[in-house]
Length: 258
Image (cartoon, rainbow, N blue to C red; front, side):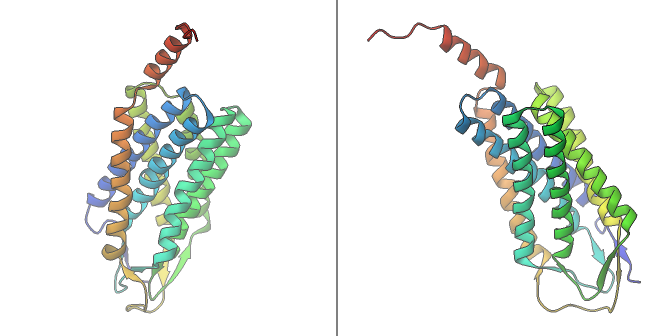
């Protein structure tokens, strides 16, 4: 059985992935806090979409593929299927968006929270295993059913908790603590899923695919830089409390006489 190494560069890729996930989750929590104070469906939708890109894109997908840069298999060069890798990124953002829109517009009643959490969790897990399927190698991939099941449970619980946090967390201190926990859950799900995998088959290089750095480097940089741009949008915008104060002030002001 070929030897796999999940930490080829030591703790560099796990730490870099965790930091990226933390930044994405914190940006997403900040965006969803603005969504709570936004007036009108369009404004709320924009903030929820920003949250989905930040959490699903950087918080989940970027973390996954940064970690994958540290994954190697002895005697099997790893390349990636380009369309499948891109679809996995879109899937991560889409399922998070669905979950956020459910609780963002319908509230955090248990039925909506569990339904949204199930969508997010299973969607994120699907993104993970789709990303694994995007690897082009000469060997065959096999999975331990029990560990796959554990990874699915982690993903659903983490997705449900993340939606609750997006609806309820207020203030930078609590948001930072929540983002740390969310990033840890994302990393936990990823490495549990990775631990479920083992390889068999012939050594050598498989035909087709694109090398990790040629594909993942630009994709990771693109998604992460998009999140950095969204960070500036969030920071320049009034906080949730400031938005509510302005709305209350506007409601108290007398209407102009025509």
